[in-house]
Length: 87
Image (cartoon, one colour):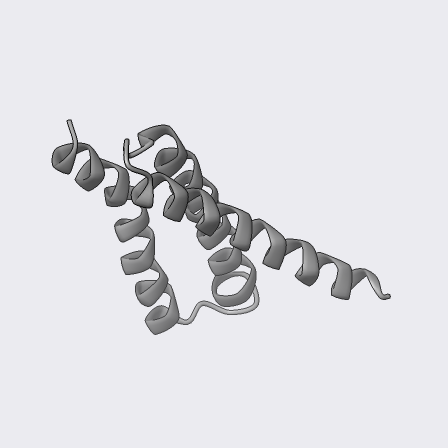
């Protein structure tokens, strides 16, 4: 397996793990806000890194950056919304 394939595979595992944490936190009966915060933070960092790697460094492309900015905003607001729903 090439190094690039390993990196992509590892990135996919990180995304799945973070998504699992968010879903587990939201769907649990007690609403584990710690899991939601941690999973959202992991995905937010992943989104920033992926945006920098693919859309900023080789040549700035504004539309994909703005699209990822909206996803990043949603990830940062998710724990706050969950906290409002279940104080």
